[in-house]
Amino acid sequence: MTIKLIATDMDGTLLRDDRTYDAAKLRQLLDEMQARGIRFVAASGNQYSKLRDYFKPVGPDQITYISDNGALVSDQGQILAKETLTRDQIKRILEWNKEHNGLTANMIILSGIHGAYVSNHATDDMIRMTKLFYPNVYQVERFLDVNDDIFRVSLIWDEHEDVKEHIKKLRVAFGDELHTTGSGFGSVDILAPGVNKKTGLVELAKLWQIKPEEMVAFGDNDNDLEMLRYVKHPFVMPNAAPFMHKRIATQALNDNNHNGVVDTIEAILADGLTELSN
Image (cartoon, rainbow, N blue to C red):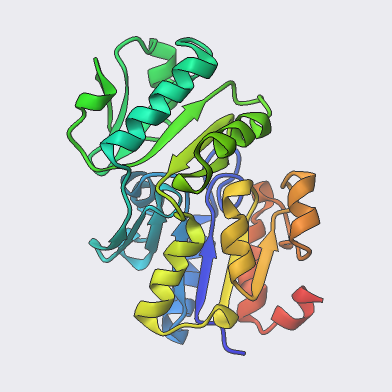
């Protein structure tokens, strides 16, 4: 089967721990993929503007973006699909978090099309950490007064905290009304119902007439699972948590700190897909 689309998560997958990647090698692979008619998709919890920043060294317009964990799909500067949270949904999330976590247990970030929004009470350290993931950060007095399309609400604990219990509680509280997923670094993302990286790929599949059987995807975390299960050729990173390896059998050739994604793509382009999948 011909491969027509390759999608990758960013943090813990394409990106090294210092948030860099082998730009020179990826640029060569992108040229080859373009010549073969293979689309390259960055599917990430990061915002669109942050993803474009990451790909400046290779040409950001060569990439299609599934950002905010599937809530926004963009190509060549054009929005192809978006799913936002309603004001009432945001209000209910904030009330739930206040009831269960108080005002100091975690940090709240609203991710919108124009930027990220945090409380006026956020400390300088919190703002500095937030700017690692969000280029435009605004402090606000009241989240419900934000005038923007909000794609997700992120609840942030310490980066080493196991957030599985928080996710379970949120899923019990909201059921199918909202989609809750872990996004790494102690973060839990809450999105509109049914929104995930898979739904972004489904939109692209319809637009470009590409079948899941013609797709490859790379990921390392809970928020990648729907995408990895959708494509025929999923690769989990060797550095992923054990629960990911129980769900996805095939590993990338190396971990994120040793060019795992680009080396595996190189092998795929050299017709090594059958060998890699065995």
